[in-house]
Amino acid sequence: MKKITYLAFFLISTFSFAQNGGSISGNLLDYESHNEPLMFAKVLIKETGAHVLSDEKGYFKFENLNNGEYTLICSFVGYQTKESKITVASDTNHIKLVLEASTISIEDLVSTMASVDNSNLSTTNN
Image (cartoon, rainbow, N blue to C red):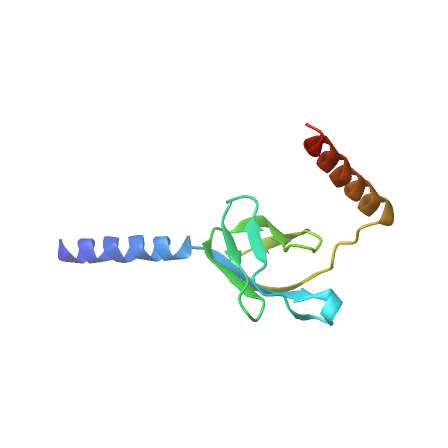
């Protein structure tokens, strides 16, 4: 009976460990500063809602993911948001992602300034 119990325990723990899947790790880099690390940028897994911030070296990591395809969404204030598809298959997937600064056109800037001026006029006239 003890042998059956030990065998059952061993099989259950083996299957549990095998289902943990893998992990996704990577580095976020700043295109504008020649691929320097992008610190404290948000990295989100679209399918699970899990999110982390990159560290001072631009490094991030998600662990214990089930095997499958995930969409990473990387964002940082003043930079374009980037989506990347990653497949997890029980190993660590290490990636490098480069974010570029957002651009704003002169027309967008003028219309933003005009709307601010108009809203200030309407509040002072009341």
